[in-house]
Length: 459
Image 1 (cartoon, one colour):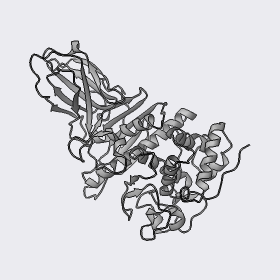
Image 2 (cartoon, one colour; image 1 turned 60 degrees about the horizontal axis):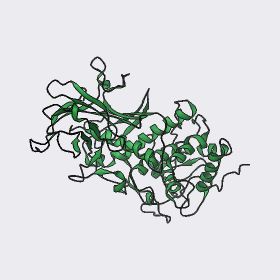
Image 3 (cartoon, helix red, strand yellow; image 1 turned 120 degrees about the horizontal axis):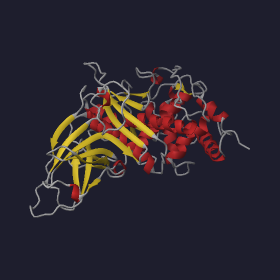
Image 4 (cartoon, helix red, strand yellow; image 1 turned 30 degrees about the vertical axis):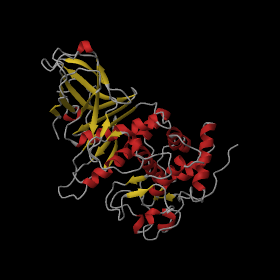
């Protein structure tokens, strides 16, 4: 994986009659995505399931491409595909007389001119961000990943579909990082209007005998990196999309904070684990879904879990699933987003108010990522909830909740209460609803996130 990927893939379409005349060609690249489905609402996931459930095809929205003359390899056209379907149009007069072209399809996307997603391998380095530039003198990491395809018989008016047939996990990672950004902008609506650059980097950091290695990390470099370890186990493919969606969620939070406050200092806690018993430990990690943490950490991680779950579920339904991606949980990974009101002693992870019912003791300003995941899901999907938009939840998460406070504090919930009367009136109202919803003890809002009652009133 330490060399650029330039794989020659011959993609020949069925021959059309020789008498057919060339016309403007609509060409639509697609990603073959290797993942096992989880979550509800497959219609919202918007893929082409053309062969089997393990290899759906997703639209390569906004993907970078170059059209080359197959004989001279001169560039005929280059750019980025359509934001919604990944297609681009090659004008009739630019098609060679042979009706053949060579395509370079890059693992690089530009959505809406301000959201960029790209996939790399190797160690991080400063790069020329233009995928079409000559990167020969730059480090391996800077050299864009690309597939090469030959298309022939470019005649007829129908759309021509072409697939990224590079047999590498980076193709899946590119698709998985693209989709949440597209989804959050287009639906509810999310309105991610700020600049947003994310690099997904495959780092093969797994031990040779590791049973599982599909964890990811979030690194804050000059552009936001999602670092993913990959192996070949089916279980890891099952959870990759939630893992990548979680890290893209962190990237969106930081990008929003930079756009709002002009700082890249990410809002994070110290992951100080504070006990709670063996079922509230960190699963061999620094933090985990059910570990007892300060609420500054639980809110941050629970919100990223929520964003990932929202991308891959029907967000107008209270039901849904989230597949957790870390190891050694001690219970199944498939998590119901709507917890059960009655306590399930045999399988407590199914229950609402996990921290309150399982962890002993639970100090003030403590909670679990699982409870906060379910809280945000309820807040977003409940018919009577104060919010139905990603944009306002993101604003609450960064702006209304903390008003630019450098969030190294352990007391995330107290910061919510302290700042409830700060900022613009519209976010004060949202935050008051948030605190009221968090403090409620009914079957919907009783997720164990500081059940302290309604937040303070603002004048």
